Amino acid sequence: MPSPSRLTLMTAAVLSLAACGGGGSPTADTDRVPAGAGEAGGAELIVRLGAVDVASLAASNGLTVLDQFGRRPIWRLRLPAGGDAAAVLERLRGVSGVLNAELNQQSQTPEARARNVVWAIGGDAGSYASQWGPAAVRLPQVEGVAPGTGVRIAILDTGVDMTHPALAGRLARRADGRVLGRDFVDGDDDPSDAGSRADAGHGHGTHVAGLAALAAPDATLMPVRVLDSQGAGNLWVLAEALAWAVDPDGDPTTDDGAHVINLSLGTAQPTELLRLITASVTCGDDDDDDDEDGDGEVDDDERDAAVRCAAGHGAVVMAAAGNDGSDSVLNHPGAEGVPGSRAVTASNAQRQLPGFANRASHVKLAAPGEQIISTVPGGGWGVWSGSSMAAPWASGVAARVLGTLPPGGDASRPTLRQWRPEDVAKRLEDRSALLCGTSIRQLDAAAAVLDLPGDDTPCP
Image 1: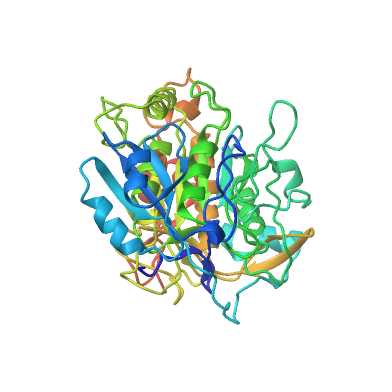
Image 2: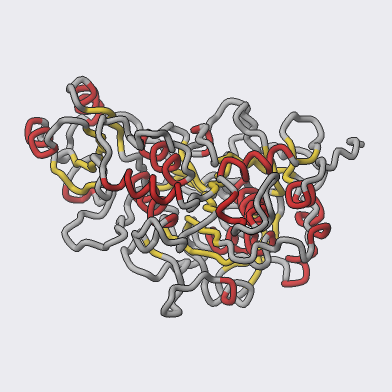
């Protein structure tokens, strides 16, 4: 069996994510097997099929069918315990009509590193607002301008402390007043940040949510739990959550989902499933035949996505670039090159890239990610570092941009529907500021929101 890829939280001490948590579904069907629940069998595979019967394919290869991805011809299958995943994947890829076969990437969390594994207690409401990050991305210059009114930001992470004083009033709500969120780990509607400080991932989603809230003070937050308190997750669950976040009610004509999605996590291995679903979410595959998955047919989910995108209900996806300190490591889905999605790396208070920040060629944008103060569970404040902290600044500024009129826009139409996700992502890159010692540029809220040139104050 090949070494599985790690799905990782993008904090400075990188945490591996395992698949020991369960995977809910938008409909919470009771007959579905939780993604990554390996006790009853071996590795999980994800296959995308053309003219192939999944039951026959599974039977002929000794596999168990666990789940279908909505109404798409994408299936989650499980090997028997001790099965050779590498051999089965190779065999499946040679079958006519199997369009793609990959591992449902998962691994056991290793011993967490000693430094910065969890947040350090520190800060308060005043230092949260006055820390170096807002000034670095010129948020004070847009105070009161396009604060993100009407924009929803989905935080796909470990969950959110929904009782935190800085966040409780910022949560998106359903028509009945309940929080608009979902827990894809437990399969319910309570996406709370669970666990304790002894748990490797505890507080991560709450910290990330606080930064998105700071960057876009009138936007509302959709907490979506895809990782448990130990940082456990897998590709299938993340892809399901992405699809749900952009269309929670399952009606593609309604504007009820996220306009911006924050992913402060990732995997070092490219994945066809995440590429496909990210492209659907961002309306990056809006070609004429609407056959997103290339199987020669248009399924019901693809038709819904086409309707949703035609109505202007796509989402910008901001993903953390990773913390390997590398110019070659790629973290996905930020590295997939999907229109409307961007990878964001971390910068420091000296207008430079800190040593841990990834800087591969696909990374064009940075935001504050070193020693960042934000919300933590229990109503407190904490300091954390990493590109996990950089991505939500970009998500917040993207929300602000969505509240402005795009160039050439029609002032008589709702502005949210005039911006395509790719337009917003490109705006953040094009209206950015100079970082020192690198060609990667810093997020610049004033330039992006006010349509100004980026702040290119010379480096010291």
